[in-house]
Length: 67
Image (tube, rainbow, N blue to C red; front, side, top):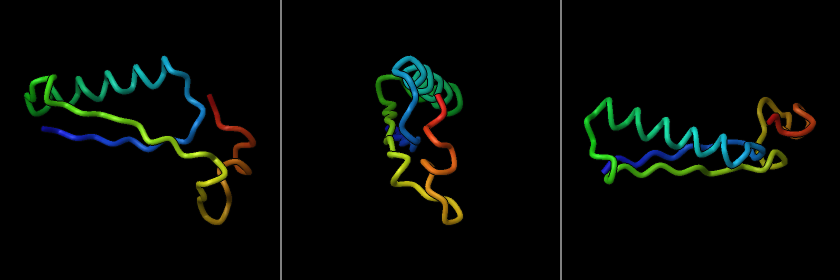
């Protein structure tokens, strides 16, 4: 059973997240011939105040999360 966890900063729409989950599911299915019913894909969203790169919070770098 393939398990795929995706980490994203908060701010994407429901439609964007659904499209991403569908595309990843399809990629896993096509690349390793896994039956779709065995593929698990989920998103872990991170608040921009809780993610830092090079000492700068994402909320400071981007102001607000890009959509």
